[in-house]
Image 1 (cartoon, helix red, strand yellow):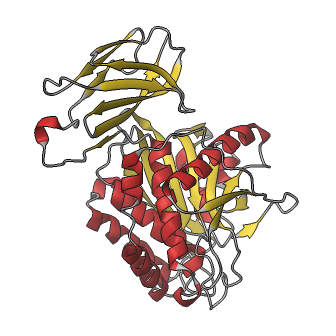
Image 2: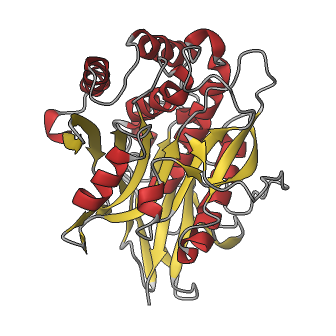
Image 3: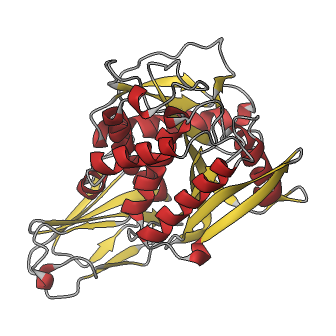
Length: 390
C-alpha cells in the first residue's frame, strides 16, 4: 500500500458526534471482538508465509480465509471465488455475501487484500484481513437492512489487480453497472508498530480523483470517525485516500472510506512485517471500531434485551409498520404492554416526536427522509431506522 495523494496533509479535527447517536447493541457487538481471535488470526496469517499473487501460499491463504467463513456458519452459496489473470499468473478474490432484510440488492462492501510481497505481511494486510474476519463472525446472524459483501482481494501489491478486475467484470459488465453499492469501506495496514503509542487511526477520505465523489466520501468518513469514537477507545484523524483497493471503485463514481494506521510502520514490503512487529491491541481496537461502523453503514436493526430469560417481555417480535410510512406508523407488540415510550429523532439525535403508550403514531408532520425510532419497554430498547415517504 502506498500514498497517492501526498500534497494534502491529514489533520486532527474536533470530533463531531452529531451524525450518530449511541446504540447500545452496536456497542455490545463491538465488544464481542476478542483479543484472542485477533491475535490468533494475525499469527496464523503470518505463518502462511509470503503470499505473492499466484503463489501456493496465496492459494493456501485464500483457503484459510474461506474455511474461517465456513466455520462461522456461512454457506457455500454465500461464498464466491472470483478468478483473474495477471500476465501468466492466476489468482482469486474471495467474496462472501450476507443478504440485507430491507435492501437486499444494495451493498455495503467491506474489503481488504490478503496478498503480500517479500514478507508474510502481518501488518500489510493481515491486520485488515483479521478484522474483516472478526466482523463477519460477529455479524453472521445480525439482521442488517443493507446487504454486506465481505471481500478479500488478491493482486493489490501488483497494482490493485484483483479489485480492478472485480470492478470491471462484476460491478460493471460490458460497461453497464450491475451492482448497486452504498459505500466501500476498506481496511489496509492497520497493524501499528509495537512499542508506539497507537491511540489514533486515520479515516480515509476521498479528496481527489472524481470530484463528484468527494462530498459523499467526506460525509461517510465523518460517520466513520463518529462510530470510532462511539464504539472504541481510539481517536481519529482524516487522511487522503490511499492507493489501495477502494480506488477502482472510486474511479467508477462509488463512495469510499477506510482505515489506515496513524503512525506508519516501515516494515510492510519487507521480511520484518511479522507478528513480532505489530501491535495486536491496536488491531483489536480498530476491530471494535469496524464492527460499530459496519453496523451503522448497513443499518443493523437491533433489539437490546437486558433480561434475556424473560421471553414474555422480549422485543424481538415487535413490528413497526408500514416502513416506509406516510401518515401513520403502527407499533405492534407481541404481548399486552402497559407502559412503553416511543420517540423519533433525526440523524443528529434531536427528538422530533415522543409518545407514551400509543400504538398509532402520527408522522404526517415529518418531512420525507430517514429517521431513528427508539422504542423503550422497561429496561429494553429497540432501535430501528424509520423511513418517511411523501
